[in-house]
Length: 249
Image 1 (cartoon, rainbow, N blue to C red):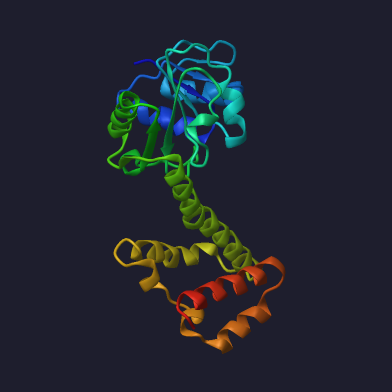
Image 2 (cartoon, one colour):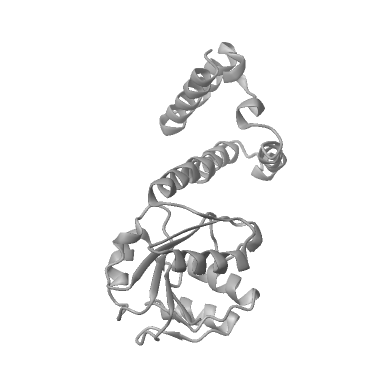
């Protein structure tokens, strides 16, 4: 099967690397950013182009959500399968006469960070059983966590990921602002962060909750509010209110 990956960002890089490590040949990398494409091409020994899109059996579009539809228009012909990697878009956003699908890896990707691809969940959706099986088999060669998913289910998967990843990372950024303001190395908080994450591998998140809000320690909550301002204060109040509502405090 000839596979072309369209895009030069984090997802494109890691999918290309995951395929390469498992001995799955990628025919071509295609995109606009020649600098990034050439870096990936050199590392993974995959041909690339910014001008000519090779003929393929499967095209995987790894671009930002707002670009998926426009990029999908460049793929010619009917006798191919096209998949996007978005967590929030339906497969029908793909604007061509080819067979449409979704190939969604549930992970946060950075080119500079090594990943264990076999642990990344993949969610697959296609228009027919044959294409569904093809994509499930392909994903299973990379990962041990593969399942079918409709667009409706995938929207909730993506929403959950925003809460569990994007929001949490933003809180890390806000926490670092506070520690930096007091000259406290943020590295000193990493064991706490690591233990918090490790804990929910064995304990339900709701059971693992600690802190002044779940204890309804009004004195500490008020003290913290006096130390904060602007957005961080709003976040602090909102988070504590949510915790207290969950535990009916």
